[in-house]
Image 1 (cartoon, rainbow, N blue to C red):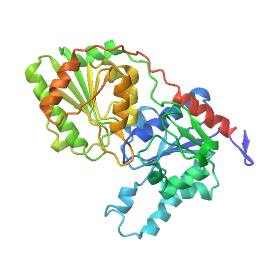
Image 2 (image 1 turned 90 degrees about the vertical axis):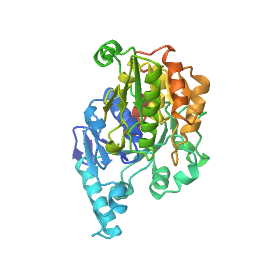
Image 3 (image 1 turned 90 degrees about the horizontal axis):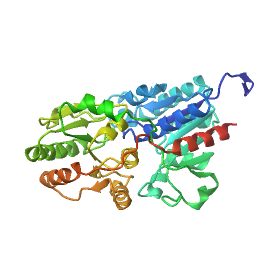
Image 4 (image 1 turned 60 degrees about the vertical axis):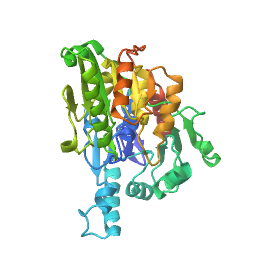
Length: 370
């Protein structure tokens, strides 16, 4: 294959996503990257990721290179010996060398592009695509320079929703593609997982806060743990698994109670969802989408996010899904009562997650390259 006068063995789609604000962005792009490989094994799909804690990508066997997070660069003391303009120059230079070394043909972003990667991409005159999920205030979101730049320059804007769920301004209409929900697609063996984890328990509760890096995650976990302790006083044989997420750091402040296992990360979390009797979750795009599709009984305690309206998402799903329930109380005792109620309910389960959004996105990316 000859591209730009060079002999090349394969095309390269480089994915770039933030890491310090949650795993959802990386999750979406990883689904697309794996779908690209399913369609064409000759296309390489490396990642440029901010910061550390990349257990998720490692579990999927996806290659990545890292750059410092904006928090490390500008809101900590680690780089204070360098002026802000020097820090930007350093990361932009690193990003350019990474894009060149990877022989990138196309850069795909999710929601919040890294400014220095965008600068490097522009200097190399590389085409770009951005995946944009529903946000509370699109005008505020689009006002950030990296987002505004990519929205204007992108060859495609992938929307991981149906067309009626989220509309962008008409100026972007010519390059918008609605691909549908993007979620992991993996066959589960619920019987094996249940026998391995159950340990004599009659009922299993999974507690998840996604990546675990958002402010307020500790308070969410401790609130649910107190409710679980209340539940155990009423109901025997209940066990719980708390999956904190790899970005969670406040370990010493967790109020662990009897009957709860704690895991920082589970690469096949959707399989654990499928074997649970009840899941307690916030309402992030990826988690709630998987829980809705799998069909497990789920209690949502929506979290506050600057751009993402988890309350609206949970409320909309509750109206159409028999397995999704929104907690509107304020005390751990009220949550314990709701948990007891839904632990005995059965839902229709899906052994395989059948979602085509990632494959649709992959096909559009490959068509764009060729």
